[in-house]
Length: 430
Image 1 (tube, rainbow, N blue to C red):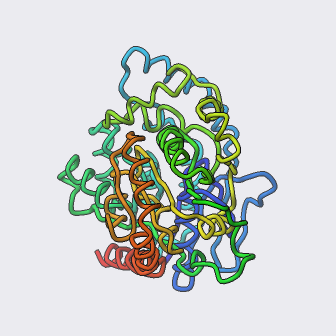
Image 2: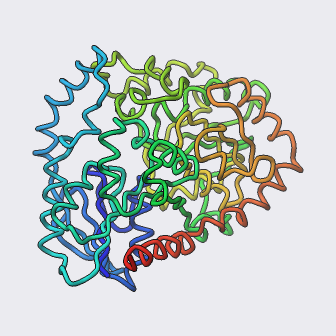
Image 3: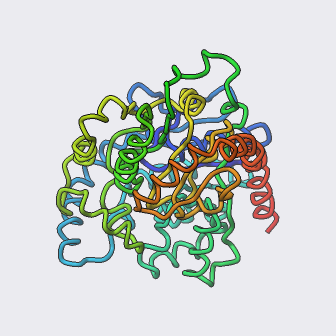
């Protein structure tokens, strides 16, 4: 069997993966599938990366420069934002024009390199517009569309329905996501299934050595792991931390993740959740926004007396994030939009209690009261009260620490990969 993963055009593929939830998912699945199949990953070509290579697991990589595609997209993006101002509903990223060159080049290489006599599964992340392109190039292939966000239910239904009709299997990373897709496209409901994200449990186990953690703090240490972008709710966390710090004068907040807003059109423009739609206020005009504007607002929101207790660590390689989990007292995920919540599972694998918003797939991942607490989104007071309560309740905190690793083990990558392999096998039997 041949398996081809098609990454998002902005995601690089290197082994081991340093960051990014979808590259992590791709790598963890591919390395477990490689012993029994010929696995190829198609991705963006980064600086100094070879166009073709193979890693120690036998995964083949084929990379493409996207500079030409991105140059072509610049005027289209500007036109798209201008059209949005007058109510044009369909965003550029949902059309066949978006990274069309990348999709066509991948499809051509697929057709040239995959023997037609060998069963082939093409596994596409998020980009439904690549489905017709791949189908035209490889009519006999089994096509899997793996959704990590809500785009299928936010784009034009007629456009998406045509693409789903050419798809053999649709995967959502949570029941929340899968159920929304089934409800919007009932004719395709039987081909929709959930494949949760996983966790490398041994990599995040509690520390046994001081070298495996960052230096300890004198007081409670709150941790956020994720992109510093409006939909992640870091502004809500900072407001809540001000209240926590008043109760715990030695409390500290570590924010780990890349700085940079997710483009307005990818989430906020197409949102059907009013809390997410309100995030438009964090963008410097809907036509275009200045890079770093959200970070500047966050910096301005930190009271002077708290400046030395809030630390932005920026992007940290995935292999090093475990050190922060091990040093923390609580993980906080205040997202307003979250299809799954990978940091939540990673924290629990390390025995770290979590406090998250009652949003998206996180309501399935977090057993409220057992491994963490759920709070309403966009509510700094409720978040602060829950954090203070859990920090004060040593018995609850201890019980959650003990329960976390066993709960996270349900999401072990071996089990997730076995589920995916079962889906592939059923596809190839039809």
